[in-house]
Length: 268
Ligand SMILES: [Ca+2]
Image 1 (spheres, protein in one colour):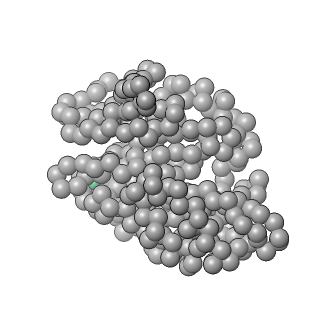
Image 2: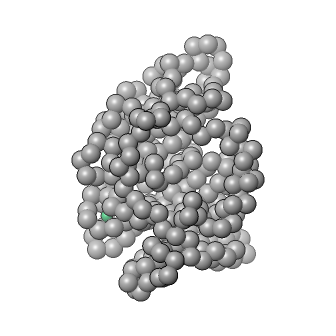
Image 3: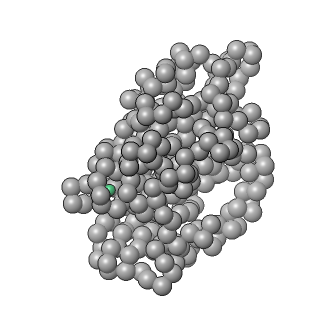
């Protein structure tokens, strides 16, 4: 938690009821089964103002930093994200997509794509009450061809320390991405909701499916108000495919998410 901005404490207190209503233990792995070889290290929040945040490797230096600043506009706020390396700005990115409150939760660095140049991760979101408090946007800022490119991807309950792992021990990082899908009628005749976990990886700034690297992916976990990690048998593979195609709103917002390519995986 040391990497989080101070105001997050307020968020967590408010969110405590949500934690109770929406226990987060729906991961693809049960206790003791999850891979532990994490690919990223958290940075410390060194500046925390209503419209400015800064993260760095330690509290005493800002020579290396990820900064986010809110720019107020008449119509819509935008956020300017900059990365400083050795005192020099190496990346600047403008987005409106940090949620209505602009909650910047965490920043991390590590080797995420398939080169040896450090990449960055910024997690924002928690854009609503109840289950929407789990909705987050993960900004991957990936080294590519001597520069960086930002790749925003939606994920629910994102935690880079457990979601960015080298799952098969080949030295490259994978990302466990979580979607929330409202199901249709299950074999018990009732309607259920599912947490859907897909495994992704990055080639340069391209996000691709890595589901074939591990037998647990993709995994549809029934949201049943108690911890659950099982792949559901409530719905058929054909239902999964149809539900996957139906929930495609994210395609518009997150064009770099391989939404269409993942459709075939849901039949596995
Ligand atoms: Ca890299």
